[in-house]
Amino acid sequence: MDFGTTYNWCDRLCERCPQASSCAVVRRIEQRAWVHRANGRDPDSPEAFAMDLDEETARALRMAQDVAREEGIDLAEVPEPPSSLDARRARNAVHALVRASVALREPAHARGLADLHHDFDAAVVLVGMKVARVTHCLPEFFDFDAAPNLLVLERAFADARARLDALAAGCEDAAPVVAAFDELASLLAPLLARVRPEHRAHLAECIARGEAPSPFVRTV
Image (cartoon, rainbow, N blue to C red; front, side):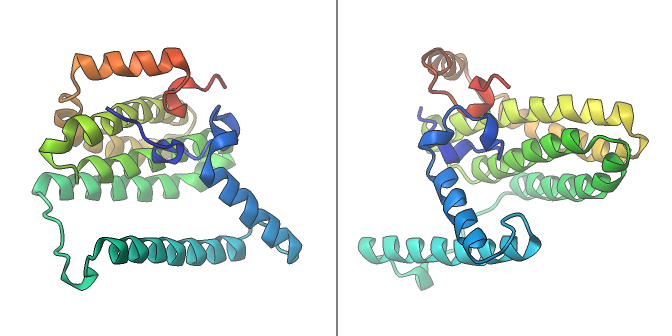
């Protein structure tokens, strides 16, 4: 079982991640921020975000095309991967949760809960990425790919739940988010139940060595 590179389990809390100094994504973000500042732009502005999104999407496409060319793969002939009904339901539930969280942003900020909502959003983004990953894993790749992603998903889900409970305690507008979260939880329970004791034992070893994903080893 392999957790892979740092950015495979990123939850966007780079300032709290003990692996940030060795992360290629952090270096890329810093490079893009330097470019924006050099051109008189605020790196956190909507304009900069749109430019970065366009650049990174084009870069990812070029990388995929390069790999396909090296492997002799004709991308025009690659079939769409099969998608089960359960996978579609889980992804739809993630989309519903994200929409509900976006709608909660303004009420949460108005009640002084901006930082808490930011952290909740970060956990939800990680949950969404891992749901997409594990629902595409083939059964024969479970130990190698799905199991480590499920462990990170489980932790991200627990982090998101704790933050959502705090949000709900201070903001009555959180009820739709709680409902969307509970719906996703019910859909993910059968997936998380597939994590076996040996997977958790491996995770414990990684935590002891300080090599586990950031959600498990950061102290802040």
